[in-house]
Figure 1 (cartoon, rainbow, N blue to C red):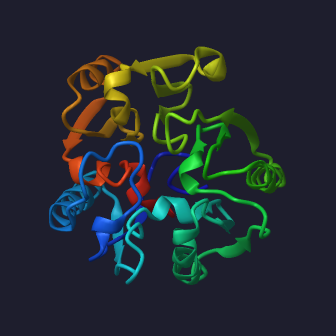
Figure 2 (cartoon, rainbow, N blue to C red):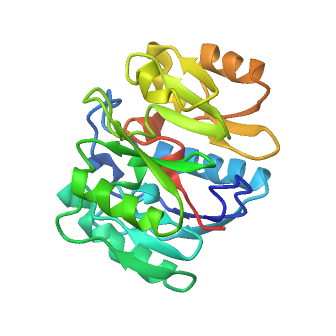
Length: 264
């Protein structure tokens, strides 16, 4: 699994903010209608942050009529030899996957999920030794079973985690910045769900959004600005935080990992 399993993260695909971003789905974090102009500015800052960490970023055009199209993480699961194209858990996002499949077919073998299998990529996390799969309102048991079997064929184990209804995706409330360590939000995930990790960095419930991070093998870690307790805890754990503004992405229930798909 290039880029994500080893955290070298050399190449990533992102997609521009849609002109109708104001209509993006928002249930958990939104307090106002998303602002497409401000979101575009923050998206540019996001791309700059990735590039500052050595990532080669490919920017795809926005998809007309798909306000959530910038959240490319949900459309596909990248393995070393193949890509699983997801069946998104919300009907309004179904039209996003063919474009991603067409682009990724240049580099990978494409595997489609069966029609009844539902999955968003935001419910999948690579830990360095296995894959965590979240069962949520966007990912069903058939989707989790399909991905587990696909991973097993590649000698990769999986762990299923029930995602509480208090959050959208598994990645919304946790991330794995290095082997054996997980950053997790209090009030969403339980200690018994994370017993396989050597270290849990707990994020206060009021700063749950900051549990979603993008880490690199050299210790640098991109994190949303405005969450001082979490930033300090991550710094004390030995990471070098890179802070970026994400307030307008947050309005559409998007997080850092949602905006990119690492492919190498």
